[in-house]
Image (cartoon, rainbow, N blue to C red; front, side, top):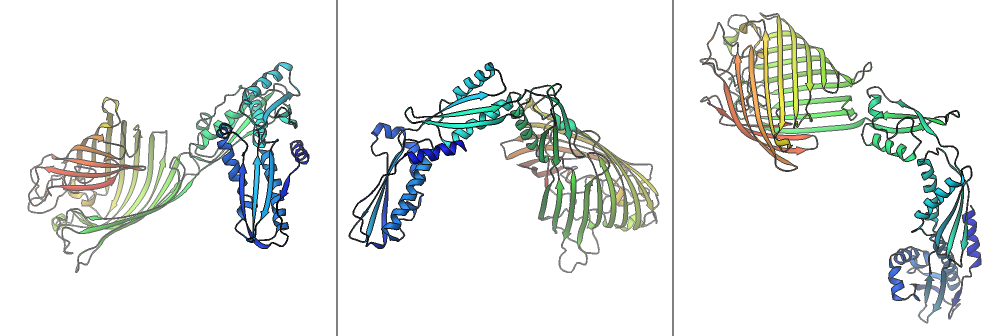
Length: 640
C-alpha cells in the first residue's frame, strides 16, 4: 500500500505536456497515423546499452489503444485527444512500475487536409532507478541485523527499483530467514522512498522473525502398500536439524518425482515452547493412473502337421486381439482388467475355427500390503501339432510380494476339457476325451535381475508345483513341477554386451505316461523353448504317425550373446537345446531318443515398455516332412 501511494504521488508531481498542432475541429470520422519515438535524444552508444530494454518497452507501448486502433476511424479530434491522454497516463504508470521515475512523455496531434491526423508519442525513459534496502529484524540482535543487511547488499548489485524486483527482494529475504531456522517470519512494515536526485528507490523493510526452531519429529501419513521408510529416505532433513524451507521444497519434489503419489503435503505442527521444537507431518496420497491399451496382430499360424476331419491345412492365418484397462500405481499395484481374443479363420468349407477368449481381473488385496488377487474366466478352442482341444477355465490366484524380489503365489483353478487326437491314444480306453480338473497352483519366484523384460545382469529363479485332481481319467492325480534358472552377465561390465543363460527342468511325478491326458504331458519346442522347432515338435515322433506323444519330464537350456548396437536397436545369436524323458509307452513306439538343438539370430527393437523381439531359428538335424527349415518368432521382451 505504501509503495502504491509513492507511485501515485510521483505521478501527480510530473506534468504531462501535450501540445497539438493545427487542430481542425471540423475533422470527423477520420483515420489517423501513429508513430512512437523512443530515446531520440540518446547518443548511439547509450542506445546500444539500452537496446534490449528499449525493445521490450517499445513492444509494450505499441500494444496500447492509440497504436492498436490506428487503422480504425475515430469520431473527432476531441475523442482522439482523450484517447491519447489516457494512454500517456498508462505509459507513465508502466514506466514507474519498471523503475523509470524520471521518465518524460510527450504527445502531439497534427491534422492534414486529407481528412487524416498524425499522432506522435515521444518517450524518454531516462535512467532506471537503482534499488536500495534498509532492513531491520525487530526481535533479533544487532549482529544478526548486520549479517542479513550485508547479505542483501550482495544481492542488490544488479537490482532495479521496479515493482517486480521490490516484491522479489521482500520474498527472497523472507525465504532466506526460513532457510536459516526461522519458521514463520512476518513482514511488519514495507515502505519505498524515491530519491529523484540520486536516482534511487529505498525500500524500508521491517520483519518480525521469532525464535529459531529445530525439527523435533517427523511423522509419515501414507496409504496401505507403501513403506514409511520409502518416504523417509527421500526427505532432505533429519530430526534435530534447524528448520529449512528449501529442504521442505526439495523433499516435496523428491516425492513427486517418484511418480507414485498424486499429492504430497508437508505440514508443520505446533512449536514446543520448552525446546523450540517443530514437528512435521508428511502426507502422501497414492497416484493410480488410468490406462487403456488395445492391440491387434495378424500373423501366420504354427505348422499344422496333425491331420483332422476339419481339413485344416498349412499356411493358415491367425488374428490376436488384446484390450486392457488398468488403474495402477508406479509399482504395478492396483486394478487391471484384461480381455484376450484369438482367432484362426479356416479356409472355405471348414467347419471349425480356432479361437480363445479370456478375461482376467487383478485387484490389490485389502488386508495386506504389496499383494493382489487375480480372477480369470476363459474359453479356448485350438488345434495344436498334437491335439484338438476345447477348454473352459475359472480361476483365482493370490500373489504376494514377500520382499522386493521374492514372490510366492497360490490359488485354485477349475477346468472343463475336451481333447481329441489320433485314435491310437484312445484305443485302450485309458484316456477319455472329456475330463474335468481341479488345480491348486503353488509358485515361488526370486528375481534379482535389473529389469523384468530386458535383464542385463543378475539372476532369476522361478519354481512351480501344481497339484491336479482329475475326473474321468485313468490317473486321478497329477503332480506337476517346474524350476528354471536364468542368469545375465555384463561382459567387461558393459550393458551393451550381455551373455545370458537359462536352464529348466519340468515334469510330472508318480503317473504312467499312458494314463496322463495328452494335453497335460510335457513337450518341447516353440517360442520359449527350442526355437528352431515348432510348438511341441522338439520331441520324438510316434512311428507311423505325424504327431508326438509327449513325455513325463523335460530338460531345456538356452544361451544367448546379446549386443546393443545403439539406443533403439540390438542383435543377438543363440543356441537352444532340449530332451524329453519318460515317453516310453506300452502301446506305441517312438523314433530314436535324442537331444534337439537349434541355432539362430535375433533382432531387438527397444521401446519404453521393453524390447520387441524378432528371432530367426534353424533346427539342427531337421526331420524331412516334419520340421521347417526356419522358424520366425515375434514377441515382447527377451526370451528369458
